[in-house]
Length: 441
Ligand code: PLP
Image (cartoon, rainbow, N blue to C red; front, side):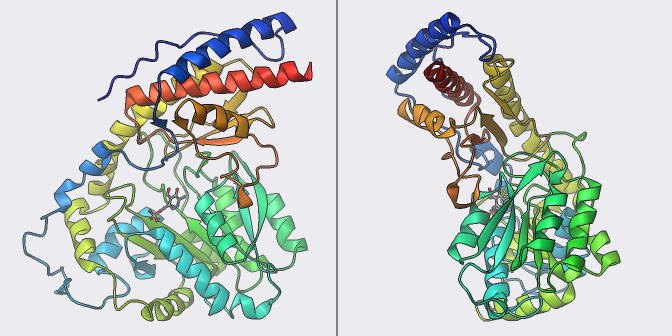
């Protein structure tokens, strides 16, 4: 572990609403000194990467060689050979509980759920997945629209932008997307064919959708166009920090009751369970959607990597094995989140210069500065060697109308690196906030 002691951390505690002009000027002078000292340290720290740290991926090193030459699965399938587009039965049984779905409704893909999401959207757009191709229904560029809860995951937004799908932002609440706004949009705005959801420990704000939200989303298939799809990206389904974290109700049961199974496609992967670059991705949906998707995928693949599926079955075994494995991740991640929370609270608590989320799992903390400051804070941090996710990344088209949201990702850095990075971040937030206030005085 590299030890980083910036030795610069000063307690400049002012409340931006209550401080006098003189107090603000004095605080600004102190912060500028602190900032100059940080700059002189030539830091090289990074809070952008929502990826598992080296100790986390090492938890699954036993994958290598675990088959010991036995490549035959419980059904007698030789996993080394072609075929099996739906995935091994044993692997579907292992991963179905992660999504709260029936193993029969699962398909296993390659190593990336994002690739599966792209394939689903592309197929629905150009070929037809649940009904006719969206592009055949509305052929003006940009006429196909997706509802995008914000702040959200930039790669979801990138898929839409790349495929020419117009994005309609809807605010997140503590219980998930603002469902009144979602239903209103569906009733009033033509061309909506999809909605992104990260239902447990959402990226970036760590929200777990409530039972009522899940139920309302399962019902959207009844009120939207027949070919409407909910892209239910459950990337952090089993990624809680402890056993007290909020559970996500299974959407499958509601979809079964409402007959909307084909209009919800659930995704998951082991990217943040085993190896981020060599895991297993899977999806669940109704029979019609899966059959059409299988046909589509059949043109580009004769079958996924079943050897890797079998490795995962042997390593994780069942829900209990997976749970035990995830507790080892939590033991590595939870202290990093605690450090981030501690430093933010120590530096910014009660300052009126920002607020942030305290998730019970997942990979991110969402920070909101005072309006208009996110870009400046990210730039101030970059100048002293602390990389932050670009401001705006959590919004469609990279445009955060308030210019306030910044996604913080604490998992990859070591604890000393993280502590130093957050202290530097706090300094940048304070400096930007006080400069703004003084400029307006
Ligand atoms: N979905 C969300 C919400 C994510 O945050 C990420 C990675 O950060 C992914 C999907 C990527 O998943 P995969 O590695 O399975 O492609």
